[in-house]
Length: 116
Image (cartoon, rainbow, N blue to C red; front, side, top):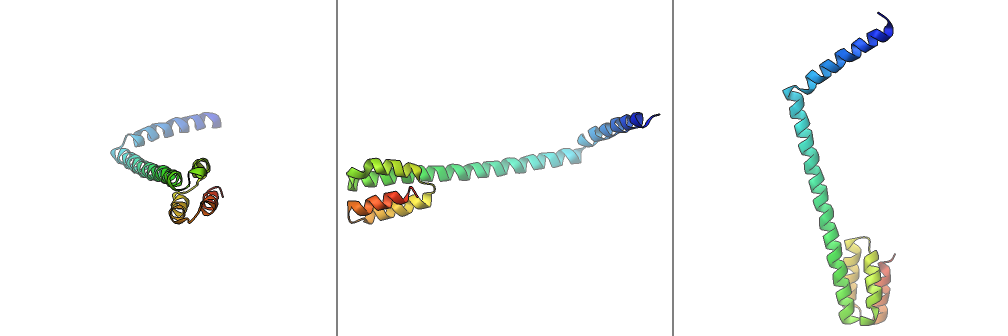
């Protein structure tokens, strides 16, 4: 038997053992556990991402509403800048500032912070 033939026989034998191992209860149990862990992790990550996206959208709306009520001349700028905001924390900070802003100039500078 040549070395190539021996390699083929070895390959066939390993595949038969591999198939037998795959069918064992222990291996099937481990696969099921791994899949369940992966799915749970994926759901948790998706839920967290969805929560953050929802929070961001809500804060964007709050910034625009606040500007519309207090500084209507800056509404188009607020819509543009709120859409550029990268984090809910930045939006929350600007929203707090807008609520306390004494005039339109301060509000203008606060909105421009969102573009940075």
